[in-house]
Amino acid sequence: MIAVIVLEVSAPYSRTVLTFVLKILTLVLAGSCFEFRMFFNCRNADLVLPIRAFISASDPSCLSIMFTRYVKVSISSRAPSKTNELEDELDIGGDAVNSNETGDKNPEDGGWDINDADLELPSDLQNSNAVLTNKNENVYVAPSPGRPNSYLWSENSNLPADQIMAGNWMNAMRLLNAQVGVVNFEPYKTIFMNLFSASRIMCTALPLVPSQFAYPQRNWKKISSTSALPAPVISLNELITRLQTAYQLTTKGKFQDAINRFRIILLSIPLLVVDSPSEESEARSLINICREYIVGLSMEMTRKSMPKDTITEQIRNAELACYFTHCRLETPHLILTLRTALNLLYKLKNYRSAATMARRLLDLAPSLEVAQQTRKILQACESVTPNEDSHALSYDPLNPFDICAATYTPIYRGKDSVRDPLSGAYYVPTMKGQ
Image 1 (tube, rainbow, N blue to C red):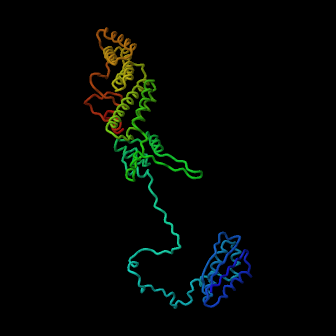
Image 2: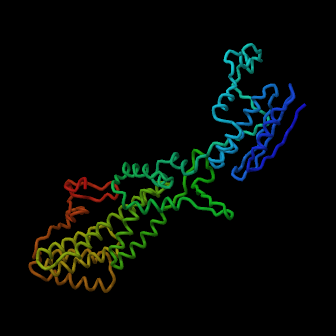
Image 3: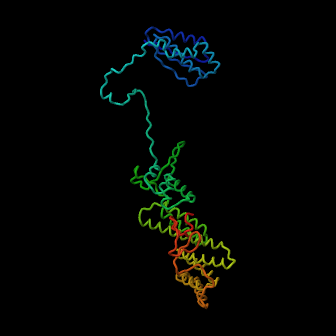
């Protein structure tokens, strides 16, 4: 038989109640099995779970040990003074507990007779590493976490734009440095942030549920773990639209705003994702356009900010205006540069150079009003005898040259120069490494 005793003891513990509990535990029939359940309802003991133990009555000390352990744990949340007082009343000091816990009164005893070496098990089980578990055990094995799409983007592509959208900015900067020689990434900060934030969308879920990120793919029809690529944020058509805005700012004379637009377009071109050779060729032409406008407009802003008091300053002013006419600009903008250079050369009494500018301007078929004014200036220049320049200029329109983007001086064909790997702008050799 199994005797079941369910005892509920409420705090505060009294000497009489605890003494009664000890007496009950010792009254066990020989050879029987005793199942002991004890619940403590104590104001100072929170979330105390019941214990369940099958104890043989043949060893009464075992009952005392189990009870002593549980009492010490259950009353541990009480005040120290009350705990010590209770232990003194029950005479369950630490030394007594430790000595009884081991149950090793006679170390010469044989102990547990567990010897499974001579058991004959089936060969398939002996060679198996499987672990047999209790069928009642509920073991939860968490699934392995998957990899986000942004991680796959970084693995599947070596394009700087894909690395930026994946969040691998260090790798993107390394690629930009290797491909186009970028060393100063401060101008790229805003572009990096815009690309990263635009490459993912946030989907609002149910109330009190966090929003989830979604990652648009450019190859969504045949996407797999080895081919996932982000949807492009910057397109060639978008850059062409920005280019038209920069053209309008140039026409209005807002040179600084136009330079900023051209520079953003130039920095964005290495981050394009093109699908055909024609798009690649169009992207390269965009680089050339941005370079010419950035160099030309920067030089024009420098010219306008220069003093014009002395003859030397006026000569330098006219030289920069002449250099600007050799930038490959759109026809309306080139007409404006030729008109500016023509007026400065005529005021400087460099009639031969002014006549050359007038002929170039008429070849572009300007408006009727501009053409009439230009013909008058040309007639005035040709009527002067001798038709010479009053001041020597560092400018030869018949000798092809490129303009240094730093010093704004001509680099004639055959002279040494260095080029920017991104824009292709020319520099004098002394600017190398700067």
